[in-house]
Length: 476
Length: 105
Image (cartoon, rainbow over all chains, first blue to last red; front, side):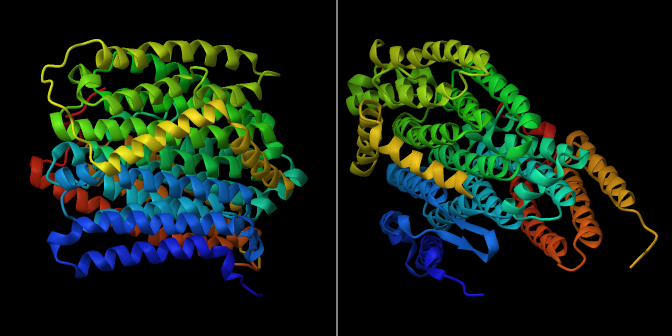
């Protein structure tokens, strides 16, 4: 059997980058470890180039254990892009609050590698290994400020709940293996089409929904996310919110549409209820929050609810909606969290009340925050509106109640997003001294803002790419 | 090769182990006890995998290989878990999960 290594170029490049960042951290003196961040960012930029150049180099490795298709490539580009933005936006925060620990940047790269493997996973073992590589890296990152009790507590909670959810997912996978006799997702689909549904398969399916529900933080499996989001270092929170969530959605779609698509009748209602609960609870509990990271955590639970709607539809348009929404969600979220991290650098607080008069102290940051929050709320000229439109359009037939609920809850979300905006723009600052962000963070902010605006006004090209990628997903 | 065993025995055993593990993970207050309970859940998974391998695909070692991967990754996870438990013990002089309440929803 010949093994085409060229299909793995992106993964190998990421792996080499992770190792070399680590080794470089070991050999350079601790005073010059600051440069590791730039090294990792530049390396990731290179890997991004490799991933884009290799876009059309698609194929299947090891009889379907590793799938390199348009769907996987789309997600890969997305993960690498979010890693770059997170690293660029957080140089100062890392310098001041995490310290010169050389493991930080290489762990970020390895978490990205885990996500990339997840996107390409074609069988249960690859899927599990990618998921664990990502999860273990994230546990390290969440607990990285090991002298800070909040960070450690968040790490502890994340570790226990992530390990538990991995065990539940694995149990589900083992039952699906037991029911179908194969662990390759494509063959699972054939077996399901032949054999119909045994009780073993249905129980396995439920376990998978629960386990992966944990990973995407869908209600009722969301309890960990506000605590972990609040306690983790802010750049890690933003990477957790975008990367971990998008990667979990990538395997969720792969498993449920690619492998268990014929059982759609069994799981569609279950996922629809999860989506509805996430929208409801996420948006309602976000209202009374006073800490901005907790508020964004609940809002990201609600976003998971919106994205799940695309899975309920289980069509090509649904997959396209998920991909498009996940892509724009990255920029809105990273933009918002970069502002949070930079403001924390100056005022040492994450309380919404302390954002008073931010527009006078840092006009760019306040504007980016405004645009990102409005995009998450789905206000028309911005990307979030288009994304929600693509998602909810797919379930108009059959799940109209979900559409109404999504609309109402989007309206509710405008309230708590605008509360932050009101504090930033209306109130007078306690201390009018300007807040410096640094050029790298400013760059991240501008990229996030421009892309959120452009995708809202001119979504055509990305929608076209997502469409083509979604088609490869259903060809097999 | 007939062993007189029925796959349902193994499924029942692993389901019982999994349920015990899940109960322990939710009810125990000691962080290390919770980690042990999670190990029980993973053991249940391994029993499932190996038993299904024996009955479904005895000609290929799919389940066995999967089980080895699960064991390896679980070891890494527990190593990390214990490291965090030690770090948090140095800070708080406690491994009781009820004490970790700095953040509340």
